[in-house]
Image 1 (cartoon, each protein chain N blue to C red):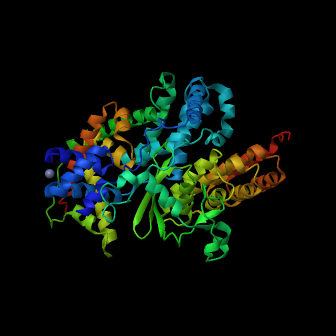
Image 2: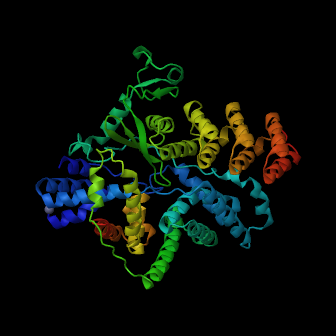
Image 3: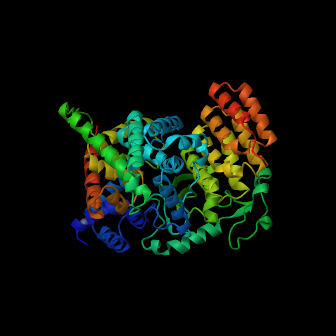
Length: 350
Length: 217
Ligand SMILES: [Zn+2]
């Protein structure tokens, strides 16, 4: 590879767009060419510097406002008509109607989260599939219930991983020497996630969101995030999966219910809510969490959304009871109206 | 040296190449939604909107730096999609299609702004102690630097300045690659150009950004 070719490849390599063969050639060139090596460091430095300027997420308010404005604009477009508009009240419930994509593939990619931590040699990428799997399967696990009540678990209690992890088992963060989850990357419309976590050195594993091991790391992103952003994304991804029915009753739902009850960010709570929707009718714990949100959530958007979600099961007595309370007591007059309207409707025949 | 090598062996972070690798059932569900929306269902269209509008808003917000502009683009893009949905022929994913509309709107806005700004531009080039921020960043992982927060803030401002100096198209490619993590192939598709052009644009953008960021005050 000539210096000229190397210079053109460097940006692509830094952004993971260089094909394997070229990456090999570039690496060989970098070994012998100091100036290109400097160039590489500079471009990688740029990437890192740019990553320090985090991308601003639109606030829940902005999103809600934009949606409202769009609805009004769409209403003004001729066609659609009255019938369509009648269906509008429950549209919020349709949010997650069409699911997040599923993908069958298992783990594909493994690499160090950020370069410069050493230890990983050229050529290691050839092993990445197996290596990634090995590492994931080697993560020590322990029963989740014990994890909560009891600080230490005996080694004998730990079931060996056979084909996949049991839902009731959590990663034993201490034994796995996982400090925290530092970053979660997921491109729009993809079910691939890359989870970066810190052990003794930062590490990174990516794979299908349906992979049970990946899912366990995601849960760890809720429990032990390095920063709030990680928690947001973890909750969102788990919620997306749950909204489409791919949700285990134990850890996944519990994580969402906790997020709905305790997360400071209304956007996160909204995401959690959407993920819980399919289980409101069947799971009494979920229903209680949503009813709590209806009554107590600080954010009116979350309260309204909760009302919209329980509306289809308003025949349920606990739901009607809470609706009565909200209709009588909510500080927000619109919310009082909506609940009242719901109560006035004939309860559906069961 | 081992730094560079280990980075070279790092794999691509995320390769969305949306919808291509997705299971058949999933394709049907979005396809069904689109067909229903094409047949006039607002609910189906709304469901499509909800799937994509947060990403759209985020992109517009980051590119324009203004909540107002981001909202305008959000509205305009989906209105346009609504009105021209009949023309959607399933040749690309809906996501690519809607992003194409969004990126076009953003590019227009950025071009208009740039033109406006260049009219009144008086380049202020303040003198001061030279400090290569990029070098600093690559070296700071070891240290507990008390002034680090401040430095980061300054760096953030410099980064915004440097991004502003790119052409709208360079800015767009860099944004979609660096911040949205899309594949260059997908980016090419969205911007109605080839992967090759997207590559060259990324190359130019990183070059310019480095020039703009190296040796800032
Ligand atoms: Zn060279």
